[in-house]
Structures are given as structure tokens and as C-alpha cells.
Length: 453
Image 1 (cartoon, rainbow, N blue to C red):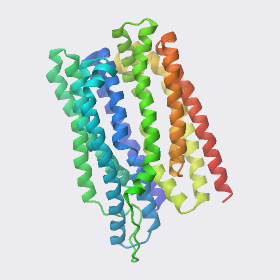
Image 2 (cartoon, rainbow, N blue to C red):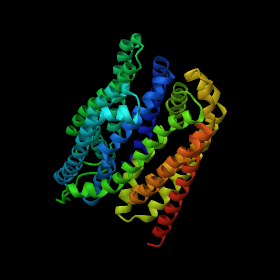
Image 3 (cartoon, helix red, strand yellow):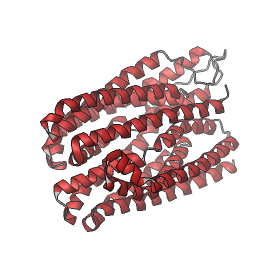
Image 4 (cartoon, one colour):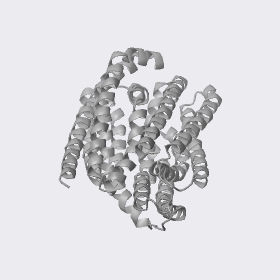
């Protein structure tokens, strides 16, 4: 099987699975919103924004390191015998798993210890304490699963990641739905949020177990390659994983920290604008917990193709096949433009049907129509960043994302007290457009350099 066919098949398989999972996720999100209400959705969104920073610290870009190291090492020993492949990829996994354990356990320790202070002083709501502690337990499994998922992607074995995603989502829905049935009669916002995050924590542990089983049954040879007779191994050390992941991770820490601060600032700004605490939390919950997941639904397709795009770009770049690399980049961008245009049209024309049909909310429908204009910028920027990371420009991407998050925080702090939630939306548009412009300029420059080599 040709590698191009493997790439297309892998991307299509992952896209199909992600579409199904996104559909199940949006439907389940609507069920959760109906069960716990807009205020609880807002509180849950705030809790998850803090958790997002903890996950960023726990994973520390290990997935990127795992994908690139796996793809690079396999490209370097192409045609080697089976034992050489196994030794090489085993070295990659030792380095990335050691890295992920270090950061995953550290993040879990800090979130567990600081949960009380975060709930009282940062979130201003003691009802989030239990949820934060439960989420802390899920951080080491998330880090290790991310490393193994990167390995499967680098080996072009997307089917395994697709299976993992299905099993994880199924477990999450099962546990969360069961817990909500048990706690809903109490009417406690704290227990309802705890039920949702508890389902997520259990599903992450389950995902790690299944990931490890799939690794043990793996052949150790990239899909589409064949083992030869030559002995040729490439060692991988901890510093190799850290050298790829840490530059991006440091930027991710700062960026996610700024994003978390931004999300904590939104309810504050809305209160300054005149909204009551309950109304501010409810409006934030509608935008962040209802409208945005719908708008991000087609990301299932974009995310699938970018997930398998990075190792392909990395392999072509490592082997200096620049003509093929330029051709792939042109085609990927063309397909992305067409796809995002279709998505914009659907969201703009059918916002009312989506908002009222899924959530029975005219407010959600209004936000979906507004965010439809942001879709082309977000999706094209995602693909552009994936191409740049595949070419080794992750540090540049980190810098741009850091500037983006800084500007967004400043704009939210300035605009939401004056414009309310629309100030946050305006900051999203401004920062996303600037981010895309900087990434596109860098990609143009990189492609131009390839033409001269």
C-alpha cells in the first residue's frame, strides 16, 4: 500500500470517527445542559478552564514530541529489519513516557494541593473544590495516553487512535449519565458538576489502559512500510523528547495561563457591565458551553487531517523531498478553504435551527450565527500551524500563540466591562485574524525557502 493511500485512508477514518464522536458529544452536551442548567454550565466551564491549564502542564506538548520522534526515527531507518524497528520505537516510547510521567505527576500534585486556594480565591466559588481534586487524579493518565497516541499517529496507525477515542467517549457518557441520574434529585450544583468531571476522570483512566493494551499488540513497524534485512537503529534519549516538547510547552503554559485568566475575567467584566452574578455565569455558559461546541463540530474533520498531516510533513521534510512537500501543502490549503467556506454557510444559514433544535435556546442560536464568521479564520489557522509544526517551526507557532493570548486577555479586560459578552466576542475575532496573518506569512516564507533548496 502506498504511503499516500495510507495517509488518505487514515485521515478519512479518523474524520469519520471524530464526526460521530463530535455528534455524540454535542448531543450529550445538550443533555447535560438540560440536566444541570445554564448557571451550572457556566461554573463547569470556569472549572474546566483551570483544568485546561493543568492538562497543558501535564502533557507539556508530549504528543508533538512523540509524533515527530516516531516519524523521524522510522524515516531514518526505513528498510531496516523488524528488530531494528522495535528497538528504535521502544527508545522513542521510553523517552516520551518518562517525560510525560514527570510532568503529569507534577501537575496532579500541584492541582491537588492548590485546589482549595483556587476554588476560594481564583474561581470565587468553594463548590468547585471537589471537582478540581477529582480532575487532578486524571492528569497522569492523560499525559501517558497523549504520549501513546502520538506514537500511534507517527506510525500511521490512526485506527488505534480512533478506537481509543470511541472507547473513551463511550465510557465518559456512560459514567456521567449514570452519575447525573443519581445526583440530579439533590439539586446541588456542586454535585452535578462533580458528576460531569468524574465521568471525564474515569474515561481518561480507561483510555490509558486500552492504549497500553494496543501498544503491547503493536507490530512496531509503520503502516505502509515493510521490514528489510539491514540492521539500522537510531537511539532516542529523554533530552530528545524534551528538546522538541519543551519549547512548545513553555509557550503553551503561558498561553493557557493567559487563556484561563481571560475566561476568569469574562464573568468579572460582565458584572462590571451591570449583569448579576447568576446572569453573567448563565450567559457565559450559553456561549462557551453551548454555542462554541456546535461551531467547533466540523473541527472533527480538520483535526483528523491535521493529526495525520504532521507526521507526513515531518517525514517529507526529513528526507528533503521538497517538491512533494510543496505539492501537499498547496492541496491541503485548497481543500481547507473550500471546507471552511461550506461550514460558514451552514452555520450562518441554519443557526436558528441548530440553536433551538439542540438546546431549545434562541440565545445559543444568536451566538452560533455570530461565531460562524470566525470559523474560516480558526480552521485555516489550525491547518497552517500543523504544517509549520511538521516543518519544525513549533517555536514560532508558540510565540505567535503567546502574543495572541496576551492580546486577548488585555482586550477582554478592557472591552467586557464596556460591551459585556460582545467585548469577548470582538476580542476573539481580532486576535484570531492577527494570529492567522502571522502564521500565513511564516508559512509563505518557509515554502519560498523550500523552492530555493
